[in-house]
Amino acid sequence: MIKILIAPNFEQDDENDQPKDVMELELVGHKAIVRTVCFNPVDPTILLSGGLLESNVKVWDTESGSNIANLLGH
Image 1 (cartoon, rainbow, N blue to C red):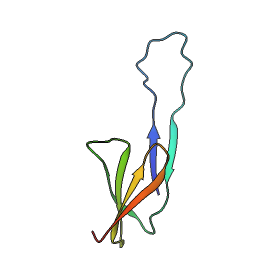
Image 2: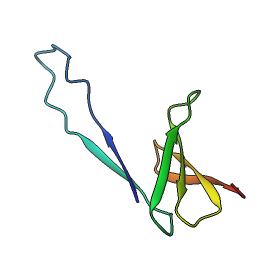
Image 3: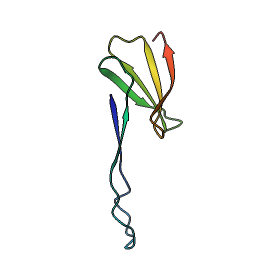
């Protein structure tokens, strides 16, 4: 499992702004230990991950938490 923490901008000085909570997103789909994660440098909503003893790279949408593709044969 991969956990992503989404933190609000704590530097805002808006007095009317209510405190915002840190949100947590879980990406579930690997069969073994996740060894590598990497955000796409062009689109930061895309995360790539690889697991131990798996022969594919998973592509995740970090806004929805869904596995959008599997790149086989890595």
